[in-house]
Each structure stands twice: as C-alpha cells, then as structure tokens.
Amino acid sequence: MLRILIAFISLMAVAQLPQVHDTLLWQRTLIEQGQWWRILTGNLTHTNMSHYLMNSVVLLLICQIHSKHLTGKKLLKLTCFLSAFIGICIQFTEINAYAGLSGVLHGLFLWGSVKDIQSGTKSGWLLLMGVSVKVVLEQIYGGAASSAELIEARVAVEAHLAGVIGGVIALLLEKAITYKKRGFH
Image (cartoon, rainbow, N blue to C red; front, side, top):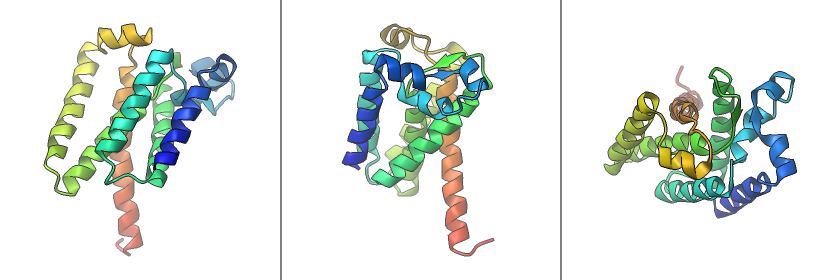
C-alpha cells in the first residue's frame, strides 16, 4: 500500500503545478462543455500548498488507522470510486469550482469505521459517530472558519456529505458483490 500512497501523493503534488492544475480542476462550465475527466481529477487538485499538505497527511493517517482493512488495490478502487461519485454529486450543487481530497477522505474514513465495526473493533463506533456528527453539523453550520482560512476557500461541505454517502454505497456494493460471488441471489 505504501507504493500506492506515495504515487497518489506525488500525483497530487504534480496536480499543483499551474498548467496541470488548470487542466484537472473541477469546473462546472468546462465539464458541461465536455471535459468529463474533471469530474474525477478535481479531487487531485488543491487550492494551495497548505490544502495539499493537510489532505496528504490526513490520507496517510486514515490509511494507518484503517490499515488492517486496506490494501493498495482496495485504496485505489475506493479512491477512484469516491472521486467519481463526489465529482458527479457536486454537479447538483451551487459549486462552480472544486479542488481537494476532503470528500474522498470522509468517504474513506466512514468506510474504514464500518470495517472496524464489522471486525469487532469497538472504537469503530466512536469513529463512525464522529464523522457522522461532523458532516451533519457542517450541513447545518457550514465548514470551519479556520479550515477556510487555511485553504483560502470556502470548505466544500457538500463534498464531505457526498463522500460519506459514497462510502456507504461502496460498502453496499462490496456486500452485493460478496453475495453474488457466494451464489446468493
């Protein structure tokens, strides 16, 4: 998994280069003009280096916390699924431009918390409750002012909500695939 993490964090660093950033950023008008890749790649971009570093560190922490459930392949699949899901969901909001991995991070955290619960790790309940309460409060009160100041942009709480919903869908899809492989109908 370490190689996947290093590659992904390096890819996000390359996405910070101005010419690359402008090509990958989630932008509503350009997506509507046919630049569909931005639905997925907007999650690789960040508003500034503080935003990039913060998301990179949180990704590393989530992968460490949930390492017993994550392989490199699983991380890659989840990240791609969540990125696409969030990129599509944002189309249904008022957001015109989006950058950041925080929606994906929320989805990964929820997914890992439920995996902890399923494996009998009691702290999974606390983690699940924490991420759930955080997202509900953000929907009511908005994102943290300190985070907005750090990233020099409004916190896209819509992406956080989409991320946790995507995490739930990923869990349900995994369950459906498991049942299908076992021959249940």
